[in-house]
Length: 306
Image (cartoon, helix red, strand yellow):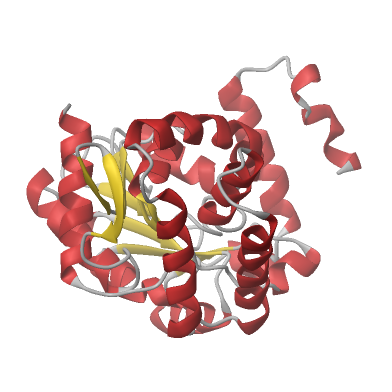
């Protein structure tokens, strides 16, 4: 926007950290003021510095990134001729449906899952990882919400671990986490044999209750105490995950999460402006189950320890 032209990359003379703080402050100032005063002037400092048993868990789609990561990834694959125009049109229609309906109909969510799996079937993991790095630069890097990015950085600066928790493929989530300097990512695990995708999932997509299962599994493995941890999401589907921690945040919340957060006294942040603030968050995939949560946690730990 015109008022922020001085923040464009060519004219940045300040440090990256100070630019990040400036962008976050400017965007926060444009959001609804009522959402900025929930904590009160007398609230204790948060996050707590030097707490080895605390961590932060961030949903990805519409919390850290504008839109759905799987849609951006699909655009990149289409550019590389992984699928045809009619498949891209189907992705676009699914994106529009979720934006308008504001709910996750199981039948439509199944279509999203099946579309993504059919596209990657037969491709090698290392191939998709390499392409994913390129797609991040092309379609995702400029979709990161500066305000949410600053919240994640505050946890990192306090010495805490920060994890993405998303229904997006774990490979995509891992790339995004690494590019943002986060600890790691919990994501949907697609089955692969000898490095080649089979077109099946391990369990179900990491969605809803499965996210909570993944967070619990990771916390147990990493020695984290959930009452000391924080979680951030835009979607009411993540209420199970948000309810696990002692510091839940509603970020760019949908109407149901906004209502629930106000009833529970949870902190709220909205980095959207104008018409954006009225739109409903776009889910990336559907499904439930502890198997998906356990698989995601195990995959995240395996990747971190390599």
